[in-house]
Figure 1 (spheres, rainbow, N blue to C red):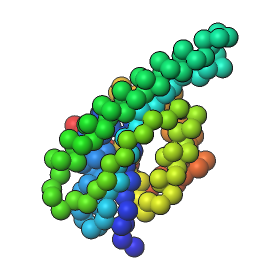
Figure 2 (cartoon, rainbow, N blue to C red):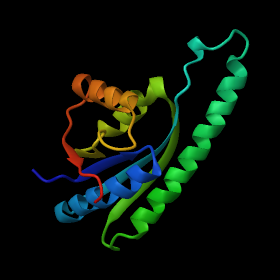
Figure 3 (cartoon, rainbow, N blue to C red):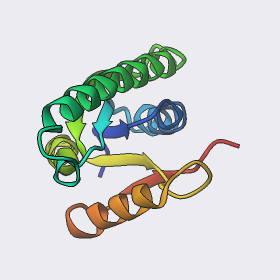
Length: 151
């Protein structure tokens, strides 16, 4: 079976710089198409804030997530431009609350033959990130591939 649609998801500039080249190599070898999803993630949980502060917190968090998505999108564009001209790819930038992350990623992963992600373990990654991705993959998706960190 050939992988014709390959998806990679980046929620940080570091992830974009690591996962995109690995996914691009697979896409080129399989003569497939690479879909890149650059995410800005709103990590706030309004249920734990003071009454009445929800609107202010949501506005600030959404603005920060949009800025993050823009930066990740720029890093993803740079990583894609560094690849060979033969690579067929698309880049989508999105903002998601952490609770809706599985829906936005899952809706794209559903149509992909292969999902290439950076390992959620290692330096600079929080315990929350590890637990979140482990829980998401063990219950909703089958992890197809994981690319190593740079270095």
